[in-house]
Amino acid sequence: MSSRGNFSGRIGFILTAAGSAVGLGNIWKFPYLAGQNGGAVFLFIYLICVFLLCYPVMVGEISIGRRAGLDAYGSYTKLGGRRWGLLGLFGIMVGIFILSFYNVVAGWAFGYFLHISFGDLLNQTDFSSFFGLFVNDLLDLSSAEGLANSNFIFSMVFMAMTAFIVARGIQSGIEASNKIMMPILYLILIGIIVYALTLPNAISGVKFYLIPDFAELKIQTLFEGLKQAFFSLSLGMGTLMTYGSYLKKTENIPSSVAVISVADTSVAFLAGLMIFPLVHFLQFKLQVTEVATAGPPLIFIVLPQIFHEMGPLLGRIVGGLFFLLVCFAALTSTISLLEVPVAYLVDQKKMSRKKVSWAIALLIFILGLPIMASQGMIPALNKLAFYKGQDYLVFVADMCDISLTVGGCLMCIFITRRWKIHNMHDELEIGNPGYKNSFLKKYLSVTIQYVCPVLLGILSILIIIDKFFGIDRIFN
Ligand code: TRP
Image 1 (cartoon, rainbow, N blue to C red):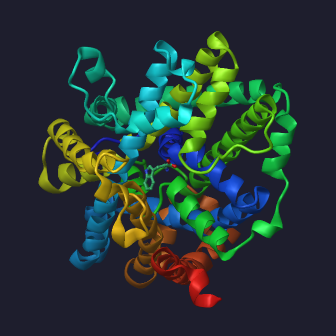
Image 2: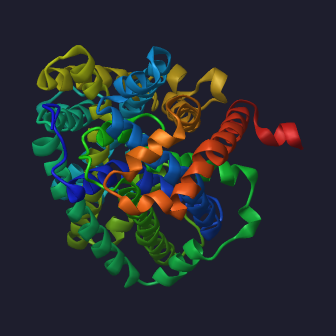
Protein backbone atom coordinates (compact mmCIF):
# COMPACT_ATOMS: atom_id res chain seq x y z
CA MET A 1 0.00 0.00 0.00
CA SER A 2 1.11 3.48 -0.75
CA SER A 3 1.98 6.12 1.77
CA ARG A 4 -1.41 7.78 1.29
CA GLY A 5 -2.81 5.55 4.02
CA ASN A 6 -5.51 2.92 3.90
CA PHE A 7 -8.27 1.30 5.91
CA SER A 8 -7.19 -1.63 8.05
CA GLY A 9 -9.92 -3.88 6.69
CA ARG A 10 -13.56 -4.49 5.95
CA ILE A 11 -15.00 -3.51 9.33
CA GLY A 12 -13.00 -0.30 9.48
CA PHE A 13 -14.11 0.75 6.02
CA ILE A 14 -17.76 -0.11 6.55
CA LEU A 15 -17.97 1.66 9.90
CA THR A 16 -16.25 4.74 8.51
CA ALA A 17 -18.38 4.94 5.39
CA ALA A 18 -21.49 4.34 7.49
CA GLY A 19 -20.22 7.07 9.82
CA SER A 20 -20.14 9.44 6.89
CA ALA A 21 -23.64 8.43 5.87
CA VAL A 22 -25.22 8.55 9.32
CA GLY A 23 -25.48 12.17 10.31
CA LEU A 24 -27.74 15.13 10.93
CA GLY A 25 -29.57 14.03 7.81
CA ASN A 26 -30.72 10.85 9.52
CA ILE A 27 -31.47 12.05 12.99
CA TRP A 28 -32.73 15.53 12.40
CA LYS A 29 -34.02 15.66 8.84
CA PHE A 30 -35.39 12.23 8.00
CA PRO A 31 -37.90 12.10 10.87
CA TYR A 32 -39.43 15.48 10.11
CA LEU A 33 -39.53 14.82 6.38
CA ALA A 34 -41.30 11.54 7.05
CA GLY A 35 -43.66 13.32 9.42
CA GLN A 36 -44.51 15.92 6.79
CA ASN A 37 -44.76 13.60 3.83
CA GLY A 38 -47.18 10.92 4.89
CA GLY A 39 -45.07 8.76 7.23
CA ALA A 40 -44.63 5.30 5.74
CA VAL A 41 -45.37 6.63 2.24
CA PHE A 42 -42.19 8.65 2.48
CA LEU A 43 -40.26 5.68 3.81
CA PHE A 44 -41.44 3.61 0.86
CA ILE A 45 -40.36 6.19 -1.72
CA TYR A 46 -37.09 6.61 0.10
CA LEU A 47 -36.40 2.88 -0.05
CA ILE A 48 -37.10 2.77 -3.79
CA CYS A 49 -34.63 5.61 -4.33
CA VAL A 50 -32.02 3.77 -2.28
CA PHE A 51 -32.42 0.51 -4.21
CA LEU A 52 -32.81 1.85 -7.69
CA LEU A 53 -30.64 4.97 -7.72
CA CYS A 54 -28.38 5.20 -4.69
CA TYR A 55 -27.03 1.68 -4.49
CA PRO A 56 -25.63 1.71 -8.05
CA VAL A 57 -24.24 5.23 -7.65
CA MET A 58 -22.48 4.25 -4.45
CA VAL A 59 -20.96 1.16 -6.02
CA GLY A 60 -19.83 3.30 -8.96
CA GLU A 61 -18.29 5.98 -6.79
CA ILE A 62 -16.32 3.58 -4.65
CA SER A 63 -15.07 1.60 -7.66
CA ILE A 64 -13.81 4.74 -9.36
CA GLY A 65 -11.99 5.77 -6.19
CA ARG A 66 -10.45 2.37 -5.60
CA ARG A 67 -9.39 1.90 -9.22
CA ALA A 68 -7.69 5.29 -9.39
CA GLY A 69 -6.41 5.33 -5.80
CA LEU A 70 -6.65 9.11 -5.69
CA ASP A 71 -8.78 12.04 -4.48
CA ALA A 72 -11.95 13.00 -6.38
CA TYR A 73 -10.21 15.29 -8.86
CA GLY A 74 -7.29 12.90 -9.33
CA SER A 75 -9.59 9.93 -9.83
CA TYR A 76 -11.65 11.52 -12.60
CA THR A 77 -8.52 12.90 -14.25
CA LYS A 78 -6.64 9.62 -14.12
CA LEU A 79 -9.51 7.58 -15.56
CA GLY A 80 -11.04 10.19 -17.84
CA GLY A 81 -8.69 13.05 -18.62
CA ARG A 82 -8.52 16.65 -17.52
CA ARG A 83 -11.98 17.69 -18.64
CA TRP A 84 -13.59 15.07 -16.44
CA GLY A 85 -11.35 16.27 -13.64
CA LEU A 86 -13.60 19.34 -13.52
CA LEU A 87 -16.40 17.12 -12.26
CA GLY A 88 -14.11 16.10 -9.40
CA LEU A 89 -13.35 19.75 -8.64
CA PHE A 90 -17.06 20.55 -8.70
CA GLY A 91 -17.63 17.80 -6.14
CA ILE A 92 -14.87 19.14 -3.92
CA MET A 93 -16.45 22.60 -4.00
CA VAL A 94 -19.87 21.20 -3.15
CA GLY A 95 -18.33 19.34 -0.22
CA ILE A 96 -16.79 22.56 1.06
CA PHE A 97 -20.17 24.30 0.97
CA ILE A 98 -21.97 21.38 2.61
CA LEU A 99 -19.46 21.42 5.44
CA SER A 100 -19.79 25.19 5.82
CA PHE A 101 -23.46 24.95 6.83
CA TYR A 102 -23.35 21.46 8.31
CA ASN A 103 -20.74 22.53 10.83
CA VAL A 104 -22.92 25.43 11.97
CA VAL A 105 -25.85 23.12 12.76
CA ALA A 106 -23.43 20.65 14.37
CA GLY A 107 -22.20 23.54 16.52
CA TRP A 108 -25.77 24.17 17.73
CA ALA A 109 -26.11 20.50 18.67
CA PHE A 110 -22.78 20.68 20.49
CA GLY A 111 -23.91 23.79 22.36
CA TYR A 112 -27.16 22.09 23.32
CA PHE A 113 -25.24 19.04 24.52
CA LEU A 114 -23.10 21.19 26.81
CA HIS A 115 -25.98 23.36 28.01
CA ILE A 116 -28.24 20.41 28.80
CA SER A 117 -25.61 18.18 30.39
CA PHE A 118 -23.75 20.80 32.38
CA GLY A 119 -25.91 23.92 32.35
CA ASP A 120 -29.51 24.83 32.98
CA LEU A 121 -30.97 24.83 29.49
CA LEU A 122 -33.83 22.58 30.51
CA ASN A 123 -35.07 25.11 33.08
CA GLN A 124 -36.40 27.30 30.27
CA THR A 125 -40.10 27.86 29.92
CA ASP A 126 -40.11 29.01 26.31
CA PHE A 127 -37.84 26.82 24.21
CA SER A 128 -38.80 28.51 21.02
CA SER A 129 -37.53 31.92 22.00
CA PHE A 130 -34.54 30.30 23.64
CA PHE A 131 -33.58 28.74 20.30
CA GLY A 132 -34.10 32.08 18.52
CA LEU A 133 -31.74 33.81 20.94
CA PHE A 134 -29.32 30.90 20.94
CA VAL A 135 -28.68 30.84 17.20
CA ASN A 136 -28.16 34.58 17.21
CA ASP A 137 -25.70 34.56 20.05
CA LEU A 138 -22.70 34.64 17.77
CA LEU A 139 -20.03 36.28 19.82
CA ASP A 140 -20.66 37.71 23.26
CA LEU A 141 -17.50 39.44 24.38
CA SER A 142 -19.03 41.03 27.47
CA SER A 143 -17.90 38.31 29.87
CA ALA A 144 -15.85 35.12 29.88
CA GLU A 145 -19.00 33.14 30.36
CA GLY A 146 -20.76 34.90 27.52
CA LEU A 147 -17.84 34.21 25.26
CA ALA A 148 -17.78 30.53 26.15
CA ASN A 149 -21.46 30.26 25.31
CA SER A 150 -21.23 31.82 21.90
CA ASN A 151 -22.16 29.92 18.81
CA PHE A 152 -19.01 31.14 17.20
CA ILE A 153 -17.06 29.14 19.77
CA PHE A 154 -19.26 26.04 19.54
CA SER A 155 -18.85 25.71 15.82
CA MET A 156 -15.19 26.62 15.98
CA VAL A 157 -14.56 23.86 18.51
CA PHE A 158 -16.56 21.42 16.41
CA MET A 159 -14.51 22.27 13.34
CA ALA A 160 -11.32 21.96 15.37
CA MET A 161 -12.29 18.45 16.49
CA THR A 162 -12.92 17.57 12.86
CA ALA A 163 -9.56 18.97 11.75
CA PHE A 164 -7.77 17.22 14.60
CA ILE A 165 -9.09 13.82 13.55
CA VAL A 166 -8.53 14.31 9.82
CA ALA A 167 -4.99 15.57 10.47
CA ARG A 168 -4.13 12.27 12.15
CA GLY A 169 -4.68 10.36 8.95
CA ILE A 170 -6.86 7.55 7.70
CA GLN A 171 -6.20 4.70 10.10
CA SER A 172 -5.24 6.39 13.34
CA GLY A 173 -7.55 9.38 12.90
CA ILE A 174 -10.59 8.77 10.75
CA GLU A 175 -11.00 5.02 11.11
CA ALA A 176 -10.10 4.93 14.80
CA SER A 177 -12.57 7.67 15.73
CA ASN A 178 -15.39 6.05 13.76
CA LYS A 179 -14.72 2.72 15.44
CA ILE A 180 -15.35 4.38 18.78
CA MET A 181 -18.21 6.71 17.92
CA MET A 182 -20.36 4.48 15.71
CA PRO A 183 -20.97 1.66 18.20
CA ILE A 184 -21.74 4.19 20.96
CA LEU A 185 -24.13 5.95 18.61
CA TYR A 186 -26.09 2.74 18.01
CA LEU A 187 -26.20 1.96 21.72
CA ILE A 188 -27.55 5.39 22.65
CA LEU A 189 -30.10 5.25 19.85
CA ILE A 190 -31.45 1.85 20.89
CA GLY A 191 -31.42 2.89 24.54
CA ILE A 192 -33.51 6.01 23.93
CA ILE A 193 -35.96 4.11 21.71
CA VAL A 194 -36.55 1.48 24.39
CA TYR A 195 -37.12 4.20 26.95
CA ALA A 196 -39.33 6.30 24.65
CA LEU A 197 -41.57 3.33 23.90
CA THR A 198 -42.40 2.97 27.59
CA LEU A 199 -43.75 6.53 27.84
CA PRO A 200 -47.48 7.28 27.85
CA ASN A 201 -48.98 7.74 24.40
CA ALA A 202 -45.85 6.34 22.72
CA ILE A 203 -47.85 3.95 20.57
CA SER A 204 -49.82 6.77 19.02
CA GLY A 205 -46.45 8.18 17.89
CA VAL A 206 -45.46 4.87 16.34
CA LYS A 207 -48.79 4.71 14.52
CA PHE A 208 -48.44 8.23 13.20
CA TYR A 209 -44.99 7.34 11.90
CA LEU A 210 -45.76 3.95 10.39
CA ILE A 211 -49.28 4.16 9.03
CA PRO A 212 -49.08 5.49 5.48
CA ASP A 213 -51.12 8.54 4.60
CA PHE A 214 -51.50 8.42 0.82
CA ALA A 215 -53.21 11.79 0.73
CA GLU A 216 -49.75 13.26 1.31
CA LEU A 217 -48.34 11.68 -1.83
CA LYS A 218 -47.30 14.45 -4.19
CA ILE A 219 -44.61 14.84 -6.81
CA GLN A 220 -42.63 16.79 -4.21
CA THR A 221 -42.61 13.73 -1.98
CA LEU A 222 -40.58 12.01 -4.66
CA PHE A 223 -38.19 14.97 -4.92
CA GLU A 224 -37.74 15.13 -1.17
CA GLY A 225 -37.17 11.39 -0.96
CA LEU A 226 -34.54 11.43 -3.68
CA LYS A 227 -32.65 14.44 -2.35
CA GLN A 228 -32.76 13.07 1.15
CA ALA A 229 -31.50 9.65 0.03
CA PHE A 230 -28.56 11.18 -1.84
CA PHE A 231 -27.64 13.46 1.02
CA SER A 232 -28.06 10.80 3.65
CA LEU A 233 -25.88 8.31 1.81
CA SER A 234 -23.19 10.97 1.20
CA LEU A 235 -23.39 10.49 -2.55
CA GLY A 236 -22.71 12.62 -5.57
CA MET A 237 -19.69 14.71 -4.60
CA GLY A 238 -16.77 12.39 -4.04
CA THR A 239 -16.79 11.55 -0.34
CA LEU A 240 -17.14 7.85 -0.96
CA MET A 241 -14.82 8.04 -3.95
CA THR A 242 -12.18 9.45 -1.64
CA TYR A 243 -12.87 6.81 1.03
CA GLY A 244 -12.84 4.15 -1.70
CA SER A 245 -9.34 5.21 -2.68
CA TYR A 246 -8.11 3.98 0.71
CA LEU A 247 -9.83 0.61 0.35
CA LYS A 248 -7.76 -2.52 -0.15
CA LYS A 249 -8.16 -4.47 -3.37
CA THR A 250 -9.21 -7.58 -1.49
CA GLU A 251 -12.47 -6.06 -0.22
CA ASN A 252 -15.80 -6.85 -1.83
CA ILE A 253 -17.37 -3.53 -2.85
CA PRO A 254 -21.00 -4.52 -3.65
CA SER A 255 -21.49 -6.31 -0.36
CA SER A 256 -19.86 -3.49 1.62
CA VAL A 257 -22.17 -1.01 -0.09
CA ALA A 258 -25.17 -3.13 0.84
CA VAL A 259 -24.15 -3.07 4.50
CA ILE A 260 -23.50 0.68 4.43
CA SER A 261 -26.89 1.42 2.84
CA VAL A 262 -28.73 -0.78 5.30
CA ALA A 263 -26.86 0.76 8.24
CA ASP A 264 -27.71 4.28 7.11
CA THR A 265 -31.33 3.56 6.32
CA SER A 266 -31.87 1.74 9.58
CA VAL A 267 -30.53 4.66 11.59
CA ALA A 268 -32.87 7.04 9.76
CA PHE A 269 -35.78 4.71 10.37
CA LEU A 270 -34.85 4.21 14.02
CA ALA A 271 -34.44 7.95 14.57
CA GLY A 272 -38.11 8.33 13.66
CA LEU A 273 -38.98 5.51 16.00
CA MET A 274 -37.16 7.39 18.74
CA ILE A 275 -38.59 10.83 18.02
CA PHE A 276 -42.31 10.26 17.32
CA PRO A 277 -43.08 8.43 20.55
CA LEU A 278 -41.38 11.32 22.36
CA VAL A 279 -43.41 13.89 20.43
CA HIS A 280 -46.67 12.10 21.16
CA PHE A 281 -45.69 11.81 24.80
CA LEU A 282 -45.42 15.59 24.81
CA GLN A 283 -48.83 15.97 23.19
CA PHE A 284 -50.21 13.78 25.92
CA LYS A 285 -48.51 15.81 28.64
CA LEU A 286 -49.63 19.13 27.25
CA GLN A 287 -53.05 17.77 26.30
CA VAL A 288 -52.78 19.07 22.76
CA THR A 289 -53.49 17.20 19.54
CA GLU A 290 -50.52 18.50 17.67
CA VAL A 291 -47.14 20.09 18.24
CA ALA A 292 -45.31 21.63 15.31
CA THR A 293 -42.57 19.28 14.20
CA ALA A 294 -41.43 20.83 10.96
CA GLY A 295 -37.83 21.70 10.30
CA PRO A 296 -35.16 22.68 12.80
CA PRO A 297 -37.68 23.17 15.64
CA LEU A 298 -38.08 19.44 15.92
CA ILE A 299 -34.81 18.70 17.63
CA PHE A 300 -33.94 22.14 18.99
CA ILE A 301 -37.34 23.22 20.29
CA VAL A 302 -39.73 20.30 20.64
CA LEU A 303 -37.29 17.74 22.02
CA PRO A 304 -35.82 19.99 24.74
CA GLN A 305 -39.38 20.69 25.86
CA ILE A 306 -39.89 16.93 26.14
CA PHE A 307 -36.70 16.50 28.15
CA HIS A 308 -37.95 19.30 30.38
CA GLU A 309 -41.18 17.37 31.00
CA MET A 310 -39.16 14.33 32.06
CA GLY A 311 -37.99 16.13 35.17
CA PRO A 312 -34.60 17.62 36.08
CA LEU A 313 -32.46 14.50 36.47
CA LEU A 314 -33.94 12.21 33.85
CA GLY A 315 -34.24 15.10 31.40
CA ARG A 316 -30.58 15.93 31.83
CA ILE A 317 -29.57 12.31 31.26
CA VAL A 318 -31.81 11.52 28.30
CA GLY A 319 -31.41 14.98 26.76
CA GLY A 320 -27.64 14.94 27.24
CA LEU A 321 -27.37 11.50 25.67
CA PHE A 322 -29.60 12.51 22.80
CA PHE A 323 -27.42 15.49 21.89
CA LEU A 324 -24.27 13.44 22.37
CA LEU A 325 -25.72 11.05 19.81
CA VAL A 326 -26.36 13.94 17.43
CA CYS A 327 -22.79 15.22 17.94
CA PHE A 328 -21.27 11.82 17.20
CA ALA A 329 -23.43 11.42 14.12
CA ALA A 330 -22.42 14.88 12.93
CA LEU A 331 -18.71 14.47 13.69
CA THR A 332 -18.34 11.23 11.74
CA SER A 333 -19.91 13.11 8.81
CA THR A 334 -17.91 16.35 9.08
CA ILE A 335 -14.74 14.24 9.07
CA SER A 336 -15.74 12.65 5.79
CA LEU A 337 -16.56 16.03 4.27
CA LEU A 338 -13.27 17.61 5.31
CA GLU A 339 -11.32 14.62 4.00
CA VAL A 340 -12.39 15.38 0.40
CA PRO A 341 -10.56 18.70 -0.09
CA VAL A 342 -7.73 17.53 2.19
CA ALA A 343 -7.13 14.43 0.05
CA TYR A 344 -7.14 16.65 -3.03
CA LEU A 345 -4.37 18.91 -1.73
CA VAL A 346 -2.36 16.03 -0.29
CA ASP A 347 -2.54 13.99 -3.51
CA GLN A 348 -2.32 16.75 -6.09
CA LYS A 349 -0.18 19.40 -4.44
CA LYS A 350 1.83 17.08 -2.20
CA MET A 351 1.11 19.22 0.84
CA SER A 352 1.33 17.98 4.41
CA ARG A 353 -1.91 16.43 5.68
CA LYS A 354 -1.55 18.13 9.05
CA LYS A 355 -1.18 21.64 7.72
CA VAL A 356 -3.80 21.23 5.03
CA SER A 357 -6.41 19.83 7.44
CA TRP A 358 -6.18 22.84 9.73
CA ALA A 359 -5.95 25.39 6.92
CA ILE A 360 -9.03 24.11 5.08
CA ALA A 361 -10.97 23.74 8.30
CA LEU A 362 -10.29 27.41 9.00
CA LEU A 363 -11.36 28.43 5.53
CA ILE A 364 -14.61 26.49 5.78
CA PHE A 365 -15.26 27.87 9.23
CA ILE A 366 -15.01 31.37 7.74
CA LEU A 367 -17.42 30.39 4.98
CA GLY A 368 -19.80 29.39 7.75
CA LEU A 369 -19.86 32.87 9.31
CA PRO A 370 -22.50 34.32 6.97
CA ILE A 371 -24.53 31.18 7.58
CA MET A 372 -24.46 31.80 11.32
CA ALA A 373 -25.34 35.43 10.72
CA SER A 374 -28.24 34.46 8.46
CA GLN A 375 -30.31 33.27 11.41
CA GLY A 376 -31.51 36.77 12.18
CA MET A 377 -28.46 38.88 12.84
CA ILE A 378 -28.16 40.16 9.28
CA PRO A 379 -31.70 40.71 7.97
CA ALA A 380 -30.69 40.65 4.30
CA LEU A 381 -29.29 37.13 4.73
CA ASN A 382 -32.23 36.09 6.84
CA LYS A 383 -34.73 36.84 4.09
CA LEU A 384 -33.15 36.45 0.69
CA ALA A 385 -35.12 38.54 -1.75
CA PHE A 386 -34.36 36.29 -4.72
CA TYR A 387 -35.14 33.09 -2.82
CA LYS A 388 -38.72 33.47 -1.68
CA GLY A 389 -37.60 35.17 1.52
CA GLN A 390 -35.85 32.07 2.82
CA ASP A 391 -32.57 32.36 4.66
CA TYR A 392 -29.06 31.90 3.36
CA LEU A 393 -28.59 28.58 5.21
CA VAL A 394 -31.59 27.10 3.43
CA PHE A 395 -30.35 28.49 0.13
CA VAL A 396 -26.88 26.94 0.45
CA ALA A 397 -28.33 23.63 1.63
CA ASP A 398 -30.77 23.52 -1.29
CA MET A 399 -28.08 24.31 -3.85
CA CYS A 400 -25.91 21.54 -2.41
CA ASP A 401 -28.80 19.06 -2.53
CA ILE A 402 -29.35 19.79 -6.20
CA SER A 403 -25.63 19.50 -6.94
CA LEU A 404 -25.58 15.99 -5.47
CA THR A 405 -28.17 14.49 -7.80
CA VAL A 406 -26.61 16.32 -10.74
CA GLY A 407 -23.19 15.02 -9.67
CA GLY A 408 -24.54 11.47 -9.41
CA CYS A 409 -26.08 11.73 -12.86
CA LEU A 410 -22.82 12.99 -14.40
CA MET A 411 -20.88 10.24 -12.65
CA CYS A 412 -23.06 7.60 -14.33
CA ILE A 413 -22.49 9.30 -17.67
CA PHE A 414 -18.77 9.26 -16.94
CA ILE A 415 -18.81 5.52 -16.27
CA THR A 416 -20.92 4.78 -19.33
CA ARG A 417 -19.31 7.01 -21.93
CA ARG A 418 -15.77 7.56 -20.77
CA TRP A 419 -14.44 5.02 -18.30
CA LYS A 420 -16.67 2.25 -19.75
CA ILE A 421 -18.80 -0.09 -17.73
CA HIS A 422 -16.58 -3.14 -18.33
CA ASN A 423 -13.80 -1.41 -16.42
CA MET A 424 -16.13 -0.95 -13.50
CA HIS A 425 -17.08 -4.60 -13.70
CA ASP A 426 -13.39 -5.55 -13.70
CA GLU A 427 -12.86 -3.54 -10.56
CA LEU A 428 -15.85 -5.17 -8.88
CA GLU A 429 -14.66 -8.66 -9.71
CA ILE A 430 -11.57 -8.14 -7.60
CA GLY A 431 -12.26 -9.62 -4.20
CA ASN A 432 -15.53 -11.05 -5.52
CA PRO A 433 -15.12 -14.11 -7.75
CA GLY A 434 -18.85 -14.85 -8.04
CA TYR A 435 -19.55 -11.42 -9.56
CA LYS A 436 -18.77 -12.41 -13.13
CA ASN A 437 -21.97 -14.33 -13.76
CA SER A 438 -24.17 -12.73 -11.18
CA PHE A 439 -27.54 -11.06 -11.44
CA LEU A 440 -26.00 -8.13 -9.64
CA LYS A 441 -23.70 -7.51 -12.57
CA LYS A 442 -26.68 -7.24 -14.92
CA TYR A 443 -28.56 -5.06 -12.46
CA LEU A 444 -25.65 -2.64 -12.20
CA SER A 445 -25.16 -2.59 -15.97
CA VAL A 446 -28.76 -1.57 -16.56
CA THR A 447 -29.03 0.90 -13.69
CA ILE A 448 -25.73 2.70 -14.16
CA GLN A 449 -25.98 2.99 -17.95
CA TYR A 450 -29.69 3.73 -18.32
CA VAL A 451 -31.91 3.99 -15.27
CA CYS A 452 -29.75 6.24 -13.09
CA PRO A 453 -28.55 8.80 -15.64
CA VAL A 454 -32.01 9.18 -17.17
CA LEU A 455 -34.01 9.35 -13.94
CA LEU A 456 -31.45 11.44 -12.09
CA GLY A 457 -31.23 13.81 -15.04
CA ILE A 458 -34.99 14.27 -15.33
CA LEU A 459 -35.56 14.53 -11.61
CA SER A 460 -32.72 17.01 -11.13
CA ILE A 461 -34.24 19.28 -13.74
CA LEU A 462 -37.68 19.00 -12.16
CA ILE A 463 -36.22 19.71 -8.72
CA ILE A 464 -34.51 22.85 -10.00
CA ILE A 465 -37.74 24.03 -11.65
CA ASP A 466 -39.64 23.35 -8.46
CA LYS A 467 -37.12 25.21 -6.28
CA PHE A 468 -37.06 28.37 -8.30
CA PHE A 469 -40.50 28.53 -9.87
CA GLY A 470 -42.72 26.03 -8.04
CA ILE A 471 -43.79 23.03 -10.05
CA ASP A 472 -47.43 23.26 -8.99
CA ARG A 473 -47.81 26.62 -10.65
CA ILE A 474 -46.46 25.28 -13.91
CA PHE A 475 -48.37 22.04 -14.17
CA ASN A 476 -51.68 23.02 -12.64
N1 TRP B 1 -24.67 11.90 4.99
C1 TRP B 1 -24.49 12.84 6.05
C2 TRP B 1 -25.82 13.04 6.77
O1 TRP B 1 -26.78 12.38 6.50
C3 TRP B 1 -23.89 14.14 5.59
C4 TRP B 1 -22.75 13.99 4.65
C5 TRP B 1 -21.50 13.59 4.93
C6 TRP B 1 -22.79 14.22 3.25
N2 TRP B 1 -20.74 13.54 3.78
C7 TRP B 1 -21.52 13.90 2.75
C8 TRP B 1 -23.79 14.62 2.41
C9 TRP B 1 -21.26 14.01 1.38
C10 TRP B 1 -23.52 14.72 1.06
C11 TRP B 1 -22.29 14.39 0.55
O2 TRP B 1 -25.96 13.87 7.61
